Amino acid sequence: MKPEKIIDISMELSGTTPEWPGDVPFSYELSVTKQESGSVNVGKLQSSTHIGTHIDAPFHYDDQGLQTHELPLDIYLCKAQVMDVSGLNKINLSDLKPLEEGVTAVLLKTASWKNRTAFPETWPVFDVSIAQWLTDNGVNLLGVDVPSVDPETSKELPMHQAMNRHQRFILEGIVLDDVAEGIFRLAALPLKIKGGDGSPVRAVLYS
Ligand SMILES: N[C@@H](CC(=O)c1ccccc1NC=O)C(=O)O
Ligand SMILES: [Zn+2]
Ligand SMILES: [Zn+2]
Figure (cartoon, rainbow, N blue to C red):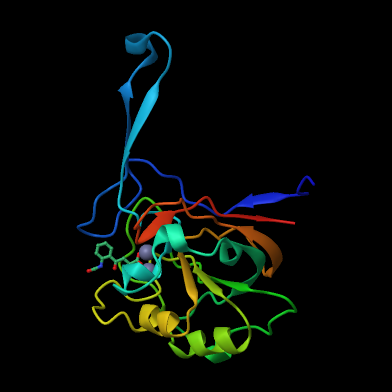
């Protein structure tokens, strides 16, 4: 069946995509050109797994956690609800919207990362009680439009750890600037990286 409409909520990956400070930037170049090989261009990638629009495997914050190749795919192919929580420094439980039937991913639109060519100096804090709420409501996946569900300088990673305790999954760096609140199908499948701690994804909303 052909989707009626597809909304791309992914960041573009290039040498100017801002990496986490100190982390390995994204790079793509041809290792062989068509000129050289006589037949094909062949590309070569190097990147942090936590670049642009990406998922965290629990192994990112838990040595015993699931690795990228082990992630259940139904988590990332599901019914999603976009909630507008823009204009807040902290997102509390009371800022969330009533959940619609059958939703298993909540995508929070903070609209705080305007310039995607630079790593943001700051972004809103997500209260850890959200992890419990997701669990109580049968929501498996939390998506955010910022680089991380915890602040840049956090070492304890309270929100990542709360999500892990509740066996909830994390999608980061989505682009929701042009998306209104509503219900969509979501596809954001990770690459099957053996032993991985995460993966960039092509995230789309469709109906
Ligand atoms: N938690 C962030 C990434 C992160 O914290 C990070 C990424 C690369 C290098 C260092 C990092 N954090 C820590 O000191 C994320 O999930 O994308
Ligand atoms: Zn990440
Ligand atoms: Zn993360």
